[in-house]
Length: 283
Image (tube, rainbow, N blue to C red; front, top):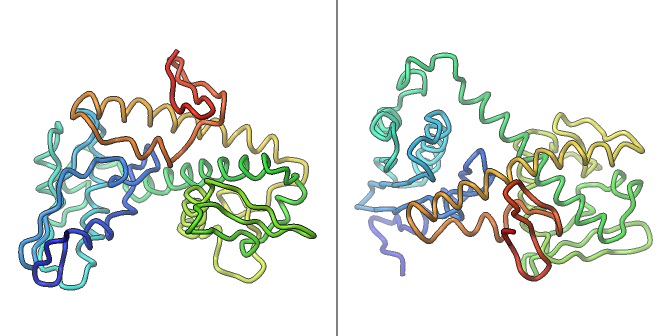
């Protein structure tokens, strides 16, 4: 049961920060289990988070902390927001800098060339490609061919929240696909964030990360490139969630279960593969 304090509850805070991503893993910090705790005292909110290793890059940590603070501070009624990073080589610098409202370069002057907005954009584009790749492959397995895929409009895809599947309207038929809702929602959110989709009537569903149409006959080559991005993020996900579980125990499972996925039979370095009905296996 949520403990309401001054109209703000822990549940409200978790909901507000639910879309804050680990940029390298393209998954929610909440779902990954990286949020250690949320404390609400009257109208003051503290969010404590932790990361898989002591040496996670400071700019990535600062980006996550900045996003957490912005989401909490935007909640109606919040007076003060504190973000605390635990067990990290720069936890004091990150926590003090974020809570003082400093930019990354102000908190870490020796890293003056690092631009967090550029970093955010790079990983947002990667996340877009990863989610698009997974969704396209799910639709192809449903026997939707390249010509049909590249002609789909945004409005042809409907996410069914009840079944956690999607339906796709094609000329002459409607195709239902199970367990596609998470990737579809994530893809559509990232497309809007990148302004690949602008909410215009008749927009194509599948465009590249710059908003350009995929060339007819070029889908296979396009998917080869996006697959390499997906496999890189998958490797990072396996490594980081294993490290987190080793370090803290528990947590860090949601990114595997419903986040970025290996296709059946695909393998990562170290013999990690996905088996039908069995999930992750190491050989």
